[in-house]
Image (cartoon, helix red, strand yellow):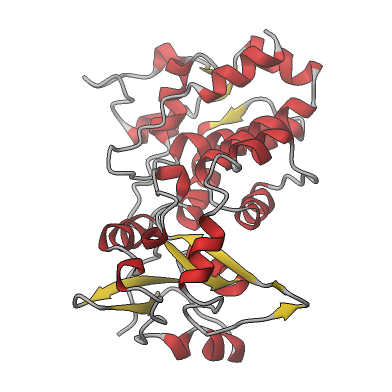
Length: 304
């Protein structure tokens, strides 16, 4: 199997995303874990080892309400032509083709691995592992900062990223950042931070509230001007934005988020406070975007 065939095979996996942009990270996170282990020389992975590791990844990087059914991607990846479950005939299936009993699957503890063709290609070209990871990360997560956290969690360090991740993240409207920052007068909508070096504004991002990877448009009502800190916290679900009536958009901090004095000063102090208003009312973050973020990214419940 050629490098191009392997890349195409990984791009074609069925991910189970919903039409409304629901995140489905079970297969992608399992593949990231398996690729990292493969790079370390562990080519055959027991289900229980995968279950524990991928469940931790889903809790850290997936939607707060799950589901965390690692048995599904472990089993269903066989249908994508890149994964094998050894001794699969010993696993009793239900009507939908999944393992009938999770308890029985754990007791059997079968080995999952890449197909021989995929494994041979990965051994022949070790750089392919990193490129496959970059493609998955670019498809599922909004920023390079997020990628670093995922790579740390799976124990894989890659620097610099491949052309794959850079190319996929460039498929956006290049004017989006300018339009969003102009709408908020080049100030963080949460804390008001603004800085310039010469004539250049620095330390501010145009954040997608509904992520670009899940159909979030490059439009100002799907954007927020945020400092680098609050952009990172928004993308990790430490806080979200809710619609309070027809006008205000309010910051809500997750009950799961915590920290020291800096967290109190730079995050909790803004809990329940309105965002800065954009220069035009139609530029406010749209309610569909806020609802998506609350369901798909925000961790747990807001503080009271």
